[in-house]
Image 1 (tube, rainbow, N blue to C red):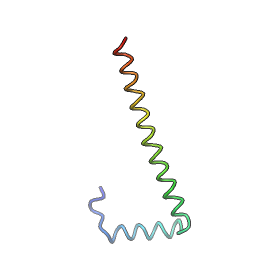
Image 2: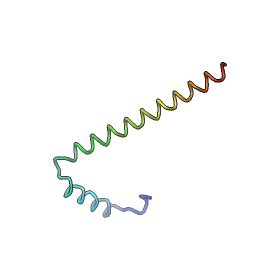
Image 3: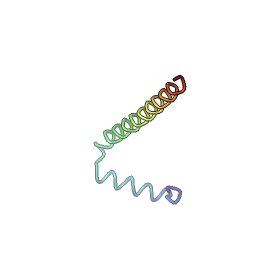
Image 4: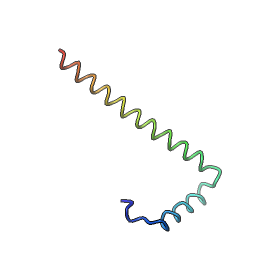
Length: 61
């Protein structure tokens, strides 16, 4: 999907983001995005652990 985007296109996208959100809010946006990704990964891991635990319980009974 992003294979067709080159450096000029990415720079234009970054410039638009700077204009829309401003330089002061970019760290907040990045931090929020990072926290969201971390929470998503943690949720996936917990879901996988829960599923494995349920499978183990079914095998033992």
